[in-house]
Length: 491
Image 1 (cartoon, rainbow, N blue to C red):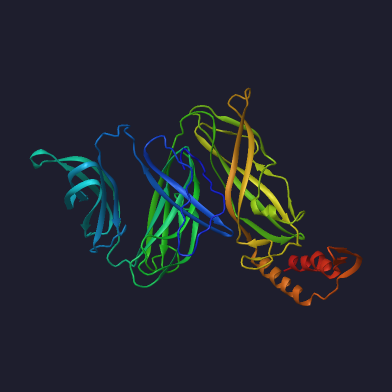
Image 2: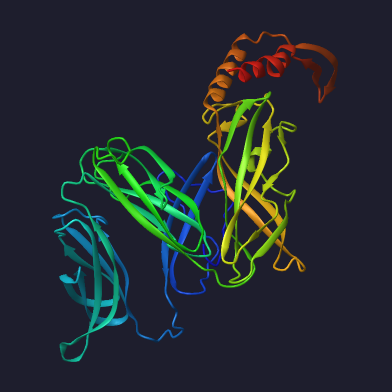
């Protein structure tokens, strides 16, 4: 969140069936009014749930006795109506003292509804509207106060745009981005929403592309429940950088997920603006990591942790020089580090580029790669299996602190510290998961009682006789050390 960074809550939470639990985090202070976006993630075991939204921050006058009259929010229900279908526009009004007000709704410059009433505190005014044309429409809500001689004075207004679907549309879509404005660049949360106007489920497929037409997110077949409104298909994040406007387009259809005129096709577009960042010095505007993908090769489960850092030169005139980038040894790989001792090995960090220059008001990407190796003795399988150490589909949180040096003149160098922080998913090659699962089952069936053991001796403790033995299972040693790796290697 702006001005506060990441706020974490770690601890034990008990939620009984059919109940809700509210977690109170530390207070957040904002330096200026405006709309602020937030991203919330909740991790429990192998489950990760994410949500996002925005809040409105208003200016505190500092005078508790001052009188206020304002529009708190404007909401359309449904948020994407269809032609000729009734939509309700819900306007929340707030006042510090009792007042008589009038709320007026304008669509494309024409008054379509108004309502008068008393307000003392907060009140919702519901204005009906039946759209007559599809497409995007501009709306304005005016708030008036009744004064002497029954005259009305305008006190507040809110405006925006509303999308209307055609009367024969089976569904409507919308691509949202938050925030829509960035200084220097940063992470943007994108949400894909769908409205299903039918009484039957609908399956949709498509993609999100950038301004150059490159696909940044594939959307596989997704079933939308009947009559679903504002249904979230997916939420994802992208790092947007480079001063200027960045356009992103969402496409969905109910035929094949391709814009070829077949089936019912819909597009939605959103623009994110990156403005020059004021100030001087080096800034980390974002960081991210890819999911780790394990495959069995060269006698071990292997993967590469790939992360990126976005560094921005906020100076308006001079380029900046970067060198000596290094990852600190205190980096954490989350639950991957819970492997049995000696089973997880890491290679050397590869950082590219390691020295470079960044022009004024420009962002550069630095790639961090770490080879991972896990012993073939470690059992893996699908997430619902038992006695599994490495699970396909499990979420882990990585924390990677790094340092570098930067200079504007190559004479005076400044130390810079940053951190990569992300929650990613552990994925595995399908054949590796299936083969390992089958082999583990075969091992459990055919493993004879081949353990070789000998007695160390017996002793009594509190009157109980205890016998100690040392054992060695040669079949398990041959299986895990030679046969299983050979089969996985050649599957």
